[in-house]
Amino acid sequence: VDPLDSLFRHESGRMISVLTRLFGFHNLALAEDVVQDAFCQALDVWKFRGLPENPSAWLMACAKRKAIDVLRRERTAREFGPELGRLADSEWTLVPAVEERFAPHAIQDDLLRMMFSCCDPRLKEEAQVALILHILCGFSVGEVAGALVARHAAIEKRLGRAKKVLAGSRGLFEVANARDVAVRRPIVQRALYLLFNEGYHGASTESVVRAELCREAIRLTSLLQEHPAGDTPSTRALRALMCLHAARLPARLDAGGELLPLSEQDRSRWDRALLAEGQRWLERSATGSELTDYHVEAAIAWAHGSAPSAADTDWARIVALYDQLMRLRPSPVVALNRAIAIAQLEGPERGLAEINAIAGAEKLATYPFHPAALGELELRCGRARAAREHFLKARALARSPSERRFFEQRIEACRRPD
Amino acid sequence: MSQYLFLYRGAQRPMSPAESQQNMQKWMSWFQDLGQQGYIKDPGQPLEPTGKIVSGKKKTVTDGPFAEAKDLVGGYTIVEARDIAEAAEVSKGCPIFERDGFVEIRPVMKM
Image (cartoon, rainbow over all chains, first blue to last red; front, side, top):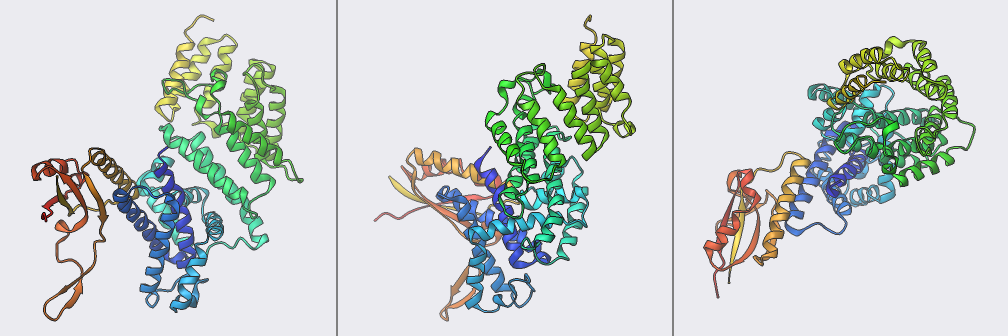
């Protein structure tokens, strides 16, 4: 990863949060302009003078200077943020007030408040995720569209509408109010979870894009967890779950960039440091009485992550965890994964029976891994012809060229004599 | 060795941070190349696109450079080269040409 790429990804969210606090949500576009401007200026200077020792501090100082300019120039023409109020009126109060908001701990607070603001319950989850990418991760409209595999115009509309909703709230979300925080926090967790899943299971064909989404979701979840308003057992479990899944990312593709099933992954390529971090957060999530779906999912991920091989996996434990997950957050996809685990534990015939008994299976009608799982189990039962039919169906549903090639390989496998 | 002032003129400003970033990386590697070959006396500075003009006997102050955007000076560098032909050759690697800009080369008068 280019250090400058991540510089902009990380700093633009911080800058925009502080500037929005100063200017108010109704001036979000102005804050975005200042951020772009500061970044372009930084790069203009750096190209002549070289990178400064601390680029992020340089960038922040530049944004601060520009913010003061804007406040001075427009204080009579515009109404700014509710907290700044009359402080902008006089030179004596303007500069100290801005300085104070650019203090490192204040910036960190504002970033978190912005995260909560983006997860406004008046917005649909998909709009929350798009906003997070755009505002907190510095993704352009085009990059958001690419990451979420949506049309540019659709994302532009989605973001435009979402910003209009936020503009009505004027100030950033207040994280000092414990009751408001407790209501909003699960929505934030959910949006970050979806962001991570978009990277991990998403439809984007570019593994670089997907890895970046996972990385950003982990970064934001860490920020949430490291802030007193966000540090709950469920946030720790969410952090654990992301680390444990992300640890397996490097092994998901073979040397030629093709998808590999879990059973064929080279486990030596798993990221040991991330696995250990995930395990640590999983242990630290086990406080209090709250058991969330994130806890259970993290425990499943750890059962896989700590197993030396697919055969040496504690499938009984995984099945029990899926039973638990079905109680906490039932869905056909969870039921499918549970059925696959049962097949590992009790044989393919039992697995097939479980898949065929999934309630609401029609929701899986476009999910290629539903027929693929049937194919896999039929193949294991020695019924290559039936298996092939299922894999053909999976191939027709493939969402990306790499999924397509993966199913083609499985179709090939059905030719081999059993 | 003689010194030459490079004036960078008229380049379009990048439209997005991503574009800015690519642009900057090209400039940095160009400067690095020149530096390694001993051409750079002073890398110079970029200039803001706005400013004031003070003119006339009355010293009237007016806004901003007279030049049109296509000629605007965006920065300068002082290059050391054998002669102006070499300086001109050196300028050809400048990324400004990708953005419709040009380099004006002015020999610094010798004492």
